[in-house]
Length: 109
Image 1 (cartoon, rainbow, N blue to C red):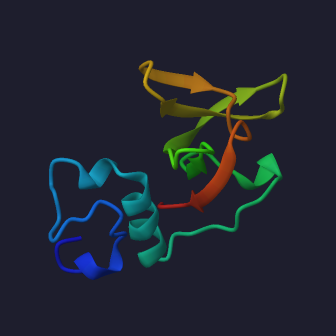
Image 2 (image 1 turned 135 degrees about the vertical axis):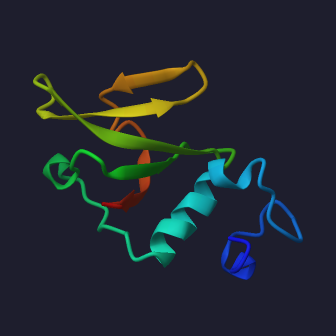
């Protein structure tokens, strides 16, 4: 990010990278993965999401962004893999792939 600061979102009004927070900001992560060619088409089919994939969501009003990872735990009731994420109540493994609007899908392996 330091070498390509202009390629990243400017919504925080910074003039240079902030190593204390930038790596946790979802828009920065989306930009990084897209710049590295790791974007995958956003799909409504759970079969397109594999363990290890990174998914980002928009949580609606207020501009809140969220990120999670698809894990290799199959959830029989929904017939899809679970997601590991932390939305403020600690790390959870849940069936939330389609709980919010998906804004990004990345495969970085």
